[in-house]
Image 1 (tube, rainbow, N blue to C red):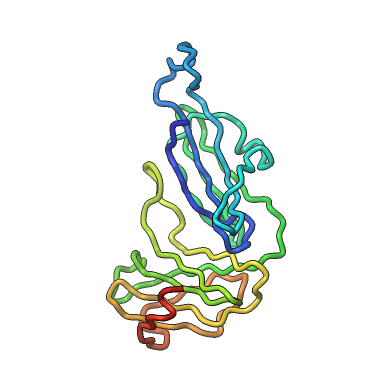
Image 2 (cartoon, rainbow, N blue to C red; image 1 turned 30 degrees about the vertical axis):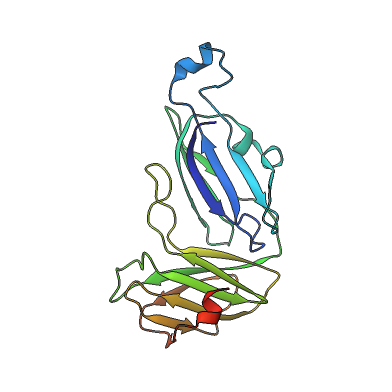
Length: 208
């Protein structure tokens, strides 16, 4: 495979990010060389087993994964604000592919839209921690993703069966650390820099 996009996204909201890869060879002529490679290649979806291992579930994921294409870049996001992460893939000399997430799950989720005031407007670089149940989930606000692509900058967390969030902590690019409480699950929350409760760095918690 020749990869053009690799993204983590929690397709079933179990709290363990899965891995999606899009591929495609550079030269169409490779098809005539019989070298074991092809110009159009299928995508690959790995399911996170939650124990440090992944399982290739591409064959079970539908034609959007198994259909071969020569792809160039991918963006992921919650396109319908329903908690299900989907993907948009650009293809060479063809229409883009929309991989709409149709996984049916009772797992919960939360998405955080950061708004910087003293930091940059989008909060790019902010580190977010979510305490739900017995776990602390960690992610960052990022700009850019794969080749000539930019994903949804709202940060999505699958929560599994946890139906309550104890707290959300944001370390902004300015160094300000804030904690936000009383946030409901299965919602997109807009959190503005300076509107939370000031929090001090906790060495013990930061190692979790």
